[in-house]
Length: 199
Image (cartoon, rainbow, N blue to C red; front, side, top):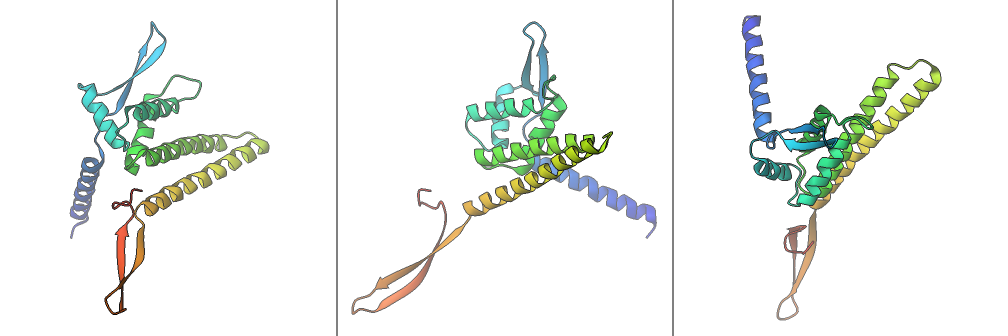
């Protein structure tokens, strides 16, 4: 088979894969920042004609039905943009994209995903500094920070994995039934945590 045909097939497969991923993940529109020059505030809006609809999609994206929680997460993510400087629309939308990619089922998972986004952004900042150091003390400081942040990110991933595994844990209970005449029948009862156990 000619190389150009193979390349074309690979490109088509790659394009279809990206389209599938986009359809399965992309729900809420991106955020846009509008600076109110009179008030000196930055208004955070969705890049959508229907703000209420976009807001509902964003709640779905972060695994919540609580408007106060969504407002808090949006404020915190927006503050990640550029500490001490003007909020960055690109960085804020990147952090939200990280949260969406985790597909949180509840607020705890959304908070972990937000922390993972913050840790990643901090690590990349320190990695950039490590590449531009002028002396050994700066190099040591930046290298320690990068290592700590990398370990923290790994711990956050493990925590999310354990949290999700615990939520789906299967508990096995031995059931003993005593029949008339003193005969015991032993059987297994299995249920998923959360199936009517009030937890």
